Image (cartoon, rainbow over all chains, first blue to last red; front, side, top):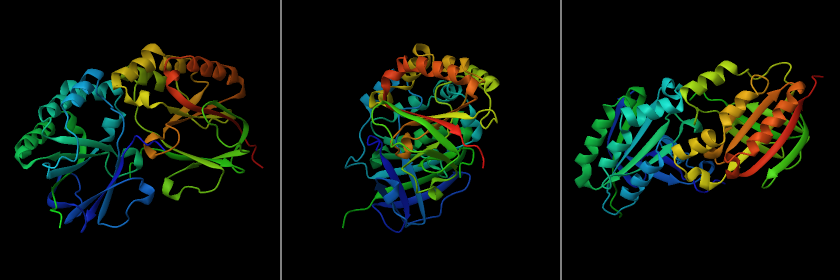
Length: 188
Length: 188
């Protein structure tokens, strides 16, 4: 019905276009180790039931960025699906209830004025493309699923982005985080 | 999994604790006229399949209020389920894509600095209790379902709140709105 939102189910198992290179639980409980991840777009009602685990998310409107930041992000971002972006990383995150109980102005201040989340992300553009999916209100085990795409040459820039984000005040509110590194399977 | 969120399904049909007094489509398409509304709490997976229509929503964190506003709202609000609150109103709303494409600072400015949504709501407290459910990311036909509860004597204060909200700039972004007035069925 709300056709402008994109729904996705990440299915961890033995099938799919993405070969798992590593899976690491950074905070809290991990996910069962799998060989492959399939990315299934579309309504959840018709979503897959197979796999060792399934993570569902939906895109949404911007929660924290201002108009000026939004314009800069759009100007500098690259789209998903670039041929050279053969490396992807899926990072499911869950934040503490303390985070969700904060008011909007408090969350914004931690997100950007203290943690510079947007500014750090801008530094990795356009090399690292990303899309954020929301999961919390779907009753999922994680609050967010972030999907990153980049060429192998941008791997170090991506690693630096992760290191910097994980040092922020915002990250003290993360109570579960898993990092799943993937590479595109060569078509047969 | 995210146990702090409340999930509800409003089922319009011939059954339920709430007798429909009126149903009105204010903007856009209405909903089929029914006799009763049942309020079913809990996970959607096990939700009801009956009824002429079903509207699902989930509570969430505050999207626009500051810490100071949040504290004032909490201090002055009454809880749901008061014995004297025999009148309830369910208002499903859908906003335009133009609204959702705005950045956070633009939506906040329209919501409060221009439309005084929070200040208008405060005036009707504690007489009118309310709870906001989010539906947009669930793939529902509406973006929000707001549930109001009040005693018959507060009916006029509630009507005045609706009149004022519908005159705001924020409401120019509403593309569908239905008003469903209910009264509690006397237990047999």
